[in-house]
Every structure is written in C-alpha cells, then in structure tokens.
Length: 157
Length: 278
Image 1 (cartoon, rainbow over the protein chains, first blue to last red):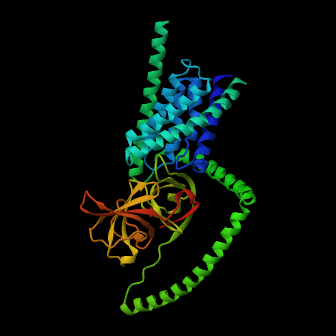
Image 2 (tube, each protein chain N blue to C red):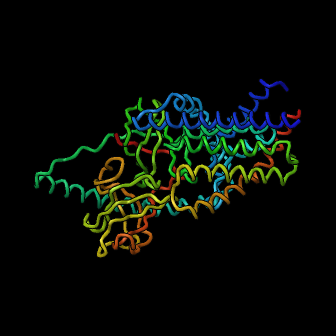
C-alpha cells in the first residue's frame, strides 16, 4: 500500500473514531467511566506505524478534540502527541499482534493521555481523577483489541 | 547499525518536538483568541468540518434508538405513561394555582410601582457534543456568533441553568457547565426568600459546592437552590434560575462557616436541546 493511500485511510479511520467519540461516547459510559474511543483507534495506528506517525496523528486528534472543548486545546493536543509517540516507540520492539500487548499499550496510552492532560490543567481532586483515569484506561484497552484487529485487516489486505 | 539506531532515535525525537511545538503554539493561539471572545481559524475550520458529521451521527443514533427501544421498553413505557399522566394532573392543578398567584403578584407589583422587567430573548439550540468526564463540562451547541450569541450568554434547559457560553465560532459555541470546576455562580436558597445567599462552584460530576454561607445559614437537605443574580466569575446569571437541590450540608473548616453540596437540576448527559438567553 502506498503512503498516500495509507495516510488517507488512517485519516478516515481516526476521523470516524473522533465523530463516534464526540457524538456517541456518552452512551458508552459504564459506572461513570467513558471510554476514549479516539485513543482506542490511535493506539493500534501508533503501534503499527511507529512513534513519528503516532505523534503526528496524536496531534491531529488532539486538535480536533480540543476544538470541541472550551479552553483545554493545549493540554489535549500535547497529551495526545506524547501518548501517540510513547505507544509508537513500542513498534517493532514488542510482539504487537499479541492481544495482551495490544491491550497493555492501550492502557499505557490512555493513562499517559489522561495524566498528561491533568498535569497541564489540573481539574478537581487528584484521587477521584486517578480512579477515573485507571478505569478509563482499562475500558479503552478492551476496545483497543477489536480496533487493532480491524486495522490489521484493513492494512494487511 | 548503531549509527542507524541513533539517527532513527534523533528523527523520532525531532518529530516529537515538532508536534509538541505545534500543539503548544496552536494552543496558545486558541487561548488568546478565546480570551478575545472569538476563535482561531484552525478551530473554526475543524468545528465547521466536523460539527455536521457529529450532528448527523447523533441523529442517526437517535433515530435507530427510537426505532429499536420501544420493542424492548413497552412495559417500561406503559409505567412511564401512567406516571406522566399522574404528574400531568398534579401539574395542571398547580399551574392553575400559579396563574392565579401570578395575576395577584402582578396586581401588587403594579400597585407598588415596580418596573416590569422584560423576559430575556431566548434562542433554541441543539447539542453538538457533550464531554462530561475527563474534561468536565465541555458542551458545544449549534449556535454561534452569527446567531447573536455573546461570551457569557446564559444557557438553560427546562430543568434549570446549564452554564454560560465560553467561546464561539460563527456557527457553534462552547458552553462551560456550572458543574465545571472553572465555573461559579451566585446562588440563594429559594425557601429562605433570598436571605441565604452564597457562591456555587462546580466540583464536577453534576455537583456544586455552595460556599460562603454563615454557620447559622438557613439551609437544609432538599432545599432548591436558584441563581441570585449576583456575583459569579464570568458574568451575572439572571436571578431565579434553578441550579439544583441541596444533597448535604457540612461545616466548612477553611472559612469556619457552612457549605452545601448541591446536585445540579439538569442532567447534562441527557441534554438534547437548550435555550440561550441573549
């Protein structure tokens, strides 16, 4: 698959994830924990294409999510860049197709995104925030696995 | 081999730094534009592109849900219908009583020479996005500066006050919910006829803390809290809008007074439409 086609496909997948996240994300909430659907799509992409692509696509998703929030654009964009880059570093260093590795990368990515955002703009008490962030990372990790299978299918075909 | 590794690491770090610089630069641009009450071109373009897609996805999901849910919810709907009929009968009676009270109040106001204030103009708006956890209170509506909205315009739902417009593009606006930790609103206890007043600050998750109450403040669990028309960080809310109900009252060790935890009347996660007071 050539680079242009690959870029368009990744852009479309991430855009679809963002639209679903912003439009229907609330409906996925379980016990007050809302999964990060955008990150669930970003993690397998970063794992597959590496740190550079992870940070670039992290920036794009951060800017779009930030455009729909009142003031937190910098924190969202920066935290997503760092999350995409860190997860992308695992590219080729781990057996990325293993389900546990994929889920673990999802947890790490989600925690980095949430904690990074909190460190830039702390909102409320840290303890409940941390509980929420851990719950969210587990939920997001569970979604990263099917998303990863989907992405593997799209790009391997 | 080692040189290859080093150059790969350097390239990755360069890309990271470039992305971080872009994120920080665009964030700073966005922040300064928001401080002026407008928005930066990148945000305007992204919102213009994505808002119709998000609205479309919500509408499709709503239509599917309304098609499918009655099949599973017919018994629950019957119960709900019976409950709403009972509520309707009770509210019809209350409305008649309130109409009568309003006529009497109007007569008395005229007698006392009060100036009748015009109700503010309202504009209906639909929710484009809601994000209520990690970044509390992020709500985007499908009205913007082209519809005459201003920074600080108050957003309400039938149950009570939602928040204030924070920033705008020509076709959309961000609303800072009153439950957001960055928001504050002048409040009073409805039962006390305005004698017990304080400031409500968001503490996230549909809760607010009503602070600056004296130790002897007349406030109880279940009391309705309304806007006082005074104070607040980003401008003044008109008086009499319902904020919520008192969930608990506790001693405020910091100020040697009392504070109350208030549950917001509006369920933000169920919001579909709102009205903006202009």
